[in-house]
Amino acid sequence: MPKMKTNSSAKKRFSLTGTGKIARKNAYKSHILTKKSTKRKRNLTNTSLVNDADMGNVKRMLCIGK
Image 1 (cartoon, helix red, strand yellow):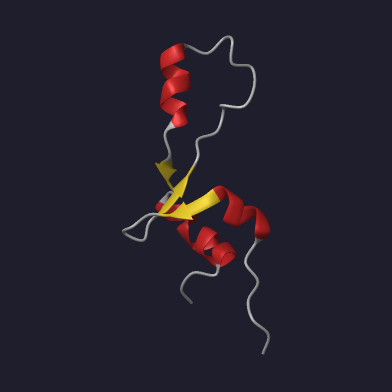
Image 2: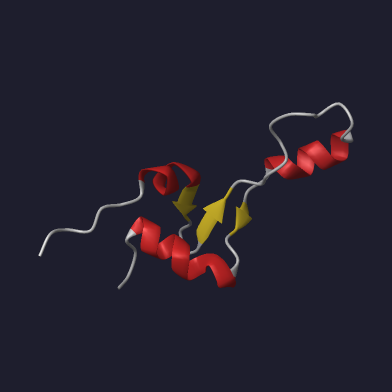
């Protein structure tokens, strides 16, 4: 049985926190920034946690757990 391969795009986009949760970056911060307020852009800088509904798919891509 071959080893599971980690999804290369997922390992660049997600990171594990110290408590085992999965962190992600926020969308809408790459372009068309002139119409967005400074407060909105600043809040998009922070990382968020992956939603519980998507946790299974992300864990499967990162080969975490079973």
